[in-house]
Image (cartoon, rainbow, N blue to C red; front, side, top):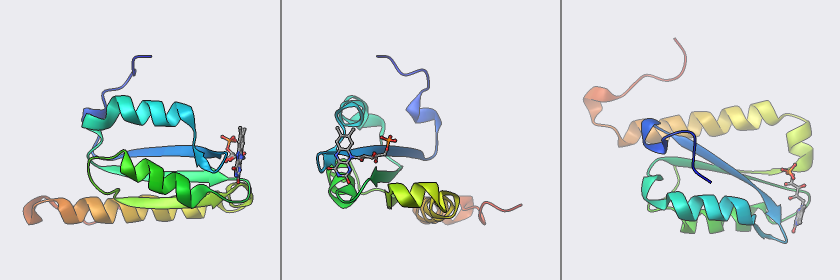
Length: 113
Ligand SMILES: Cc1cc2nc3c(=O)[nH]c(=O)nc-3n(C[C@H](O)[C@H](O)[C@H](O)COP(=O)(O)O)c2cc1C
């Protein structure tokens, strides 16, 4: 299926997957394999019911041309209670890592105005 958005138009792309049988879900694996060349600045997150999110993050990382800017593994319970905080931390970490990769003159001071 063709993407509706050009991944190259975004500074950072966030990719998430559920854990399926302790592994990366097949739809997200397929998406990442098809998009590999355009996945330069990526932050990863994975959810699971009990365990497996760390393996999923590692498998996703192997499909990237360079290490992810930031990663987040979450239990379903985390998603229900406090997801906004965890996701906010992921966004902050990704922005900081992205910023460090920019030439000094182009760095931004953060997400807050
Ligand atoms: C086919 C399938 C396999 C799953 N395997 C695992 C597993 O190995 N470990 C685990 O903790 N959760 C497992 N889960 C639970 C999902 O990871 C969990 O429901 C998901 O992270 C929540 O995201 P979702 O709402 O997008 O499904 C599985 C779910 C499905 C449907």
